[in-house]
Length: 499
Image (cartoon, rainbow, N blue to C red; front, top):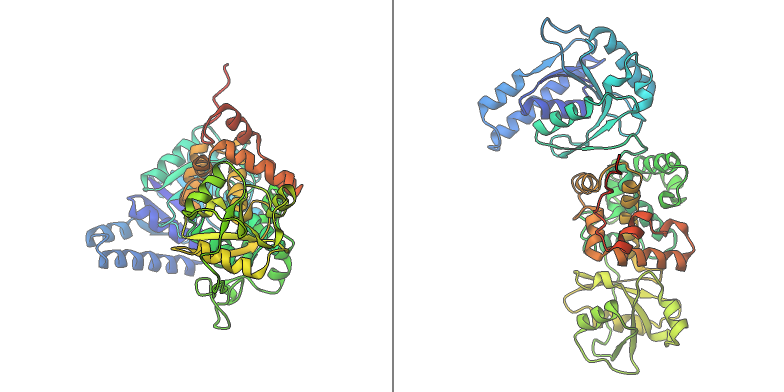
């Protein structure tokens, strides 16, 4: 296929490298001719580096570079019998600029050329509406770096022709990436789904449940994420994250489930954006610890032999007893396996000794890190002893008592936001899980992840969090409630209605 890429910045040159390496011919243009020259040099260096590392032959490199055609102008008329079949725009994220590019392209390219905008946040329908033929345009949202991020969102606008999304999907998959079709909604799919983790991480920080380093450790070690939420926001830039949070929240008419934090505005104003400014939640300028070397609080010095009793019955209590692997003893620590509730509630409901009762997150039991929940009444020696009891072969993090503890709340939010995406018909369950695993690097797609816990337990967790906190952000979606009631997995799609 012959394509034209308009915009030779980071995204445009990445798309060009990806396309020519896959065998397509790519015209590359930009308002600045210097940008085109720099982009061609970049693609050449990337190909030569691939040859040096044995990932590409020298002949393949030469052929790929021969397929990269620099243009003097984005609006250059096509050569005879060489009109591009597809134009991919990758210019500034401003609606009028993008619409203006396509308006000019309409004048020089034939009606058969399909237009695709690489917008990450602008409504595709609004860009297309300014064209004489809006049906030829759709969104084609790539992620940076394009050659390595193997997922692309295909976003039809309200008037996009029916033949355009399949053409774009075939093109993406011919280059070795996966394509998912997504409705034209705020944040599309990946950016929308990503709000589940970061908004809940901020909610935990607002409540002083734990600091960024502890929350990141739990996210990595208990949930298996490659990066904790605050480490991730430092990498992407808090200014970018805050903008996406506000865009998605306002775009969905201020949904409680997507509510951003009041903490972001001051941090953004102060320039605490993360790696690119030298300081964020961690320091990158040598003035403090980074995300992987922040010291862990010392919980040592406790008595690992102190007697322990597990409070309650049911699967969570049974799992905790099995994890401890020791006889229970009276008069010592009382450990409560909470599921969407708090230790304080258990103390009040069952008359437990407040000074020596602590919570344990059941999600953390089979992981490298076990998580203790501490109430305002917990005695310091009880915290040290409980940490010693749980520490054999495991790291231990103590957090303040909160409904559901840290990992449960993060997972509940991740699954809930994904279920809401499915419920709205923004994308299919399979595409949601595929896009999130490839786009965000989660160990499982969020709906499949919820299924490892169980639809009924995820429903119960949401209901308990809602009842305990009174916050509607935790209310289980209809998607989760229906599947739990019917004994179906969360990945079960909605069947088409007859007729």
